Image (cartoon, rainbow, N blue to C red; front, side):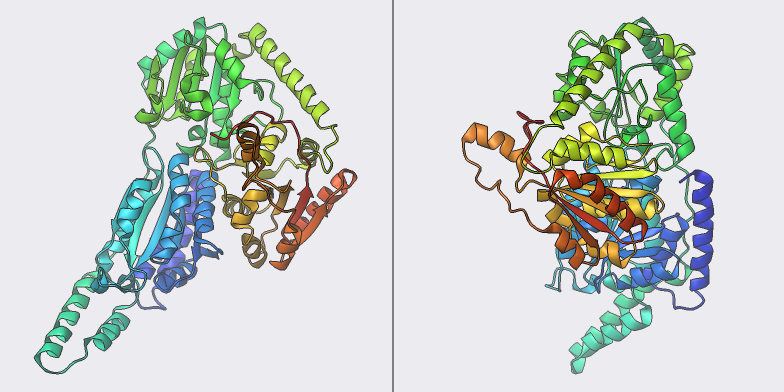
Length: 607
């Protein structure tokens, strides 16, 4: 969402929230909800619970769409997707205890993907903390290692500022998740809380009198100043600009390079308002093209240059990095995906642009490193280099293009092989042919999804969502939910492995109830094939890697969607076309594709 659109949405939401105060007694749930609305939050993902009910009801009154899911992890994954696609922190509210613990994997995934996510966690009443109350655990200690910031509100008047702080911290610096604990007795009205405290007093004599006095004093402390609490206005977050002198040195090195390579990672899409803002994404794409450096796009950056731009290279990245004499990592750390930095030739000049100083020097310290917004650094570098990018390094680009073409020919040949069922490479190529220009791809799986990564091409910026560095299975349902809400007119395709599908298949119920016609494709080869590819050759035993050809299409239909079985290659185009028709009619649909075993990814490992 562009800055002007965000401001307008926030203003409208604040007006709606202000009107709501005239029809309901102000309470902590309302203060939280009004703060979310004032900061441009459009969706609140949740699985209901008594600890958080006032937030949900108030959010609905304030004009924030409440979207209830079937698993708390999906709520956080959906919030993560919204953050990546809009640039505004995604928000999930979950109940106390098990509700919070169910989010841990999703929160850690957001941390490693550097997604600005706010988790509002319900909690036992302040009076009952540590006394064995229902679902009372040490939630802050559990979440602190997985978040940038964790805090617990202690009084009602603290809630608006704490909520605003959570939103701001999530999006500042290196983006990431935060956790705000909201005890239940801060969220309901003072009248109701005092009534409940009164019921808990009981007893006769001096002891009963003292307990009643204490409970009254505690309630007064909780609500003191609540009537004067105000919703803070959003404050702009200043982007981290690159140092111009160091950037000039990068430009000089790049000007002397003969075989440069650029790797653009997800972080380049996540800052300076780029996420969700087409104009800003276009500015970054224009800068990348102006530089003229052969580029590999990773994770959320996939699609930045569209489907077929000749500057983008898709295959044999490791070989290109080995041969390069200068490599720029823009928002892409030298982690396992780059062989811990060893994929880059030792004689190459390494340039790094990253918001995180830790990531900048991870495994291999760059020769020239700028702790800055990688998107702004690339834009400034293009300006420093000036015109002529398309003419630079012609021989080097031709060599890489020839390699890409050779690999594409190999993939086309592999798509023709007989596999016993539907050839997975052929299926992915058919999906690629069927995708419209306005589409979003969500990928959740191992072997089938890795095959799709080589064959299915995102059409535009911010149209590819994968877990990120954590490699988490189970993101699919939540990511697709968030994507369809943010891009209601786009076709949202969810590519699932049959192993990963089971984690969030229940969210088909959510798609159906909320009228979100997602198209899901399950690559069903009856196994955890990514693991089997290494386990069987190395250990000689497929134990725990074998599944059944489960009727996932029937499960989706049971949840209120529609299901299609694709069990023969000749039906592929027909089934894909039918799925698009069903989605266009407003229903979510799942294709259960019985794929065969392919040698396409032979030798791959998952460590």
